[in-house]
Image (tube, rainbow, N blue to C red):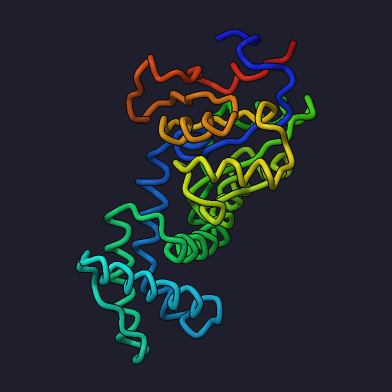
Length: 252
């Protein structure tokens, strides 16, 4: 790819995390197992916290919806505290086994990861070209934004605790599934409205073709991230392919 691939009029770069800025294995081999391991102990220590109570109420409503759809989820019982923890734990694992983009699940995961980052058990992982690109794009006056199915809290934690230091100083906005699913065209339209950026000025980079298709349908320039550990992509996917952020707006 050469530097003329993307218009120099682009002033905002919207990035996926998993498979784009961060190795897929970090999410599936580090973050998810960490959350599974600590769900019970975290709930035992924090179940009376009002924010946790809100998460549990949302989980209970999701479980009722799953039941009504005949998906046979584990039951949740919030009446008894000790039994509530066991039942919530079973439902959380059920959701994770299905890779469900549950807002309540993502919220709890983010809180558990926050504790892990704070005590030094976790370190955010990004590809080596990411901090270099962030600094370059920042110097070029291009805004950097993140859009991930993980909660905004989880996003900030990854970028604020890397071995390259705190990278959040380069990031101006974060978006999660509160704006909608990443494979929905309406989500990108919502992001455009929030940023007040014309579609042709916002470049979206992701490793998931369905996400790129949805963004393209909203008028955004797109690029497919090809990283070690990503699922294979077809070369005829109609999205320019990049193998490193070094290829995206290199210094002139």
